[in-house]
Image 1 (cartoon, rainbow, N blue to C red):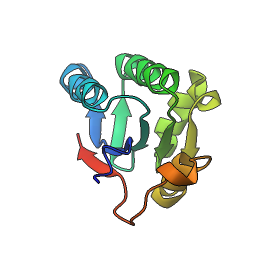
Image 2 (cartoon, rainbow, N blue to C red):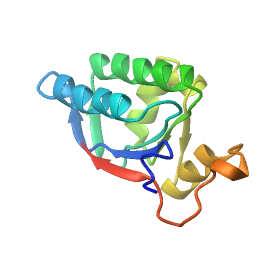
Image 3 (cartoon, helix red, strand yellow):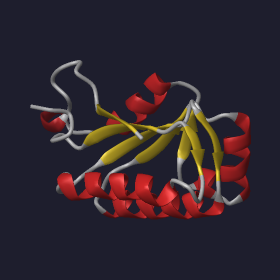
Length: 130
């Protein structure tokens, strides 16, 4: 059974999220929502993310809403200090937890998962490089 069908995914986003690319990257993420019915939890790995504009913050807020209304979790891992600052100023850190390590983030989305639906293998979440 693939990790994607268990509703866990890791989205690795690097570079810049700005007017030149945010709409196309957002469509890729919305496509994941369509492909995974029901509960979905996502780790946004921002280790390589250098910049995000206000539109990308709006999308992140929307993704959070779509995932949580389906009973899932959204967390962020390895965000650089400037990205953390932006997310804190707009209040997203009150909704979305930010973890220093990818392992901590992955563990957090598995907390509270009933044993019968918990991952059986160490395969880990599906990884998307956007």
